[in-house]
Image (cartoon, rainbow, N blue to C red; front, side, top):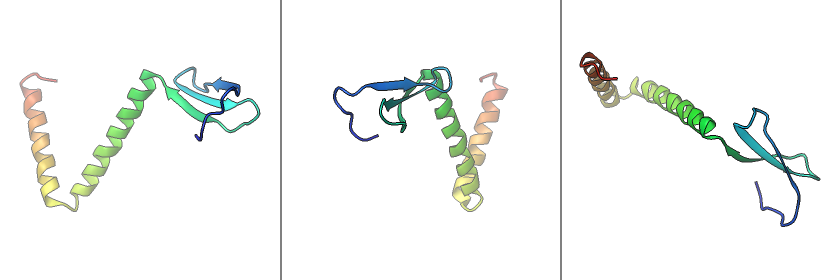
Length: 86
């Protein structure tokens, strides 16, 4: 983002109805990220989680210990579902 310019006018824009907010200086078209709504933050965290689990499963194909641990996680998950837990 760089440094903020004291006294410079910033224009705020949101291409997605407020979930993501960008700012830009009036004399410049280059945007910088200002922030996300709570909803967007949660969505990004879920997407990162999906990618993480994908990478873990892929790594388990070459790592026997990781593969065994994932099998244990699956068993625990299925047992907890059997007991009526979500």
